[in-house]
Image 1 (cartoon, rainbow, N blue to C red):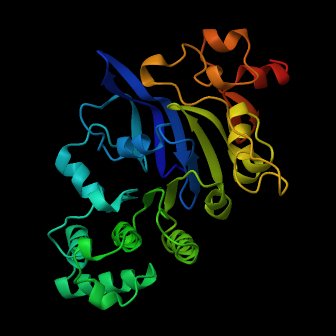
Image 2 (cartoon, rainbow, N blue to C red):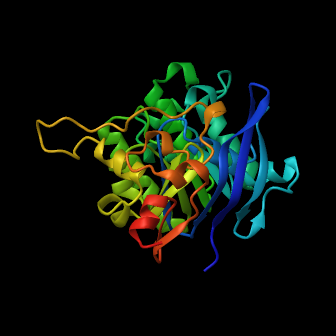
Length: 325
């Protein structure tokens, strides 16, 4: 089976203090049709930038330095702006993390969703509006018909987020990128949205790249998990393996710092230190400055991918030493 979305050696940089610094560094990922791949990591690790790179929407002065993004085998990097515009929202859609800046303040939310449908499908405006009302109902927007006539400033943050989700789902995309899709939603609505994403997969066999920091959502929805630190992959594995048998020190630290990971009454563990500034990234492993298992090779070179099982890999010299490598 060919992958729905393939990210090959993707590198993205920004100019910082007179030099170009890679915020995404040689990241390779694959997502199969009907699969959910969760991309996790701390804020600032580059998760959202990978999503924008896939959509060819990296904000200037950032740029894609190297790599390819293939949508069902078609390389998106050489495509013209009009060609990319046709693909976005149709074959490849994204739920953006911040609805405040993603919705036009001068057009009703119903018009914005209907326009997205009309852009990619040959339907009447009446049919597009009817689909919009149906989508609003499915994502849990109360009084859906009336809400289509509202402007973004008349809606709460949670309702705007649901409008963004409805827009992303409106054309039944083959690949959906969901960047923190349940931000600002209460637990009940969050459950509805996760179920809606599952329904989308069942109906269309779509692939989902789920960007999140919430391991509860990962456990609910993901098939596989990739862990990102300072722009580099550090571990990738099936959900059950990664949640219960993580090998990279950073993944282990992330899981130990999550609520529910300790006995009641005990303090959560914290990963020492913080993400290094982009201008001060270590020459070798980027996690070396915070890792309790650091030793000489970590400061000198970048660890290669170590295959621990058919679908489990880690980028770590300490793990390689454990494996006898």
